[in-house]
Length: 375
Length: 182
Image (cartoon, rainbow over all chains, first blue to last red; front, side, top):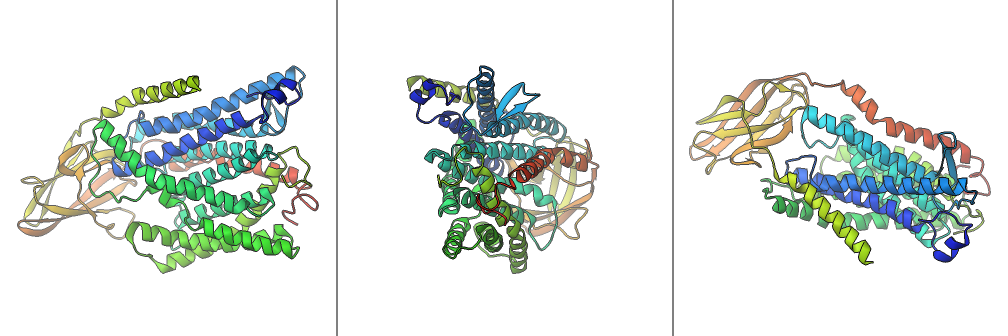
């Protein structure tokens, strides 16, 4: 976890400065994600809840790992700066002065650390909430959405951390990996939109689609070469496939461990993986093809991303509703809702494509390498 | 490597040890009951808290006279803000009281007058009955608007962060940099 690139010790000690803390924050996010998919499945398939369940401990320890790793990097950066050693901006990005320059915090680790700290605060609020309302296993309660948004902030910080190391292959892979983790999480966070009634438009599907499109385009805009969108969507597909198997298995194994029965009439559908858009990978491949044609013809990719985002939103939004219908009931469902949701997601996808491409560019700027290079 | 594995083992052990309280689930404690007649079948509806308040979770039990035996059935809820009963769901055994039907840690989300409709199939055919006028009082705690506002703070913070970053990178992302917007 050395931070000083200038020190000869660092250069000789490791050829990958920053990989260890970056890997640790990503591992923390993945542990939280495992806890979340397990917890959601547990409530559906088994039921009873206390604060001290194993899925909860995964959720909380994941955030604790992110928080402690971020804090360690901030403290080491602060120490390095105070000692007059130059700070390597490839480790988490340029250092920002916090509390009147008391601390020097790399932008990425500052964001992931703030997310982890907020998680702790919303965790306390969630405890109070459950004391008042009981453990009612409702995913879209205000403290739960606060918790999920805090994790979102942590993962955005993780993406920034890897983006700062863009010159390394692991940095680029880490960006796509953390973007995919963000899409996986956002599928659940979007359930907060269940409070919004836009009948026949399904608000949660529109929200989930917007974030998926935005993050896939962020992958494309970050790499600025073919492959960024597909890499992000492919990692999400792997997460979805692994959790499709893992979530029901973990819920049942834990139920056996603590001697609780599985509910009557469980759907058998892995809940959190079922929320993730299955069409994202083929749609990302279409987006890559479109961007490839645009590149060859010399079109402005920033403008191209607007139309491509709209089309991606339309396809992902409509198929997401079909996917849910087929997975849960074997029927496509209400065609009016499918079309209305697809159109709404397409309209918002325009902003998703545009903003995502731009966010990808912003992520590139975190790395201290010349913009002429493709790394 | 050995140290890392030992540390990992210690963490997993600690997690499992602290997770053991998960085993200690409270029994289902019924403090109030109501009677429903569903055709030829009498049914006792039990509540683990009384009176009911919106959003507060509780255990419901549904016990047909003579036990669940070979009977099956469905339950449809009527939310006071909805025009009709929700889609019926199969009556399932309570996860912590397997000899009766029930709902565990379920909250009724809105205040007002709820209704439960039971359809029961058994040796004496099918019968339907309703528990009408189930009063649910207002939710305790802060108003939902305030709670959602508190929960939205990370989102607002994120939006502010994005706006600042967007403005600061505007110049560098035009033209020769990453052709994002123009």
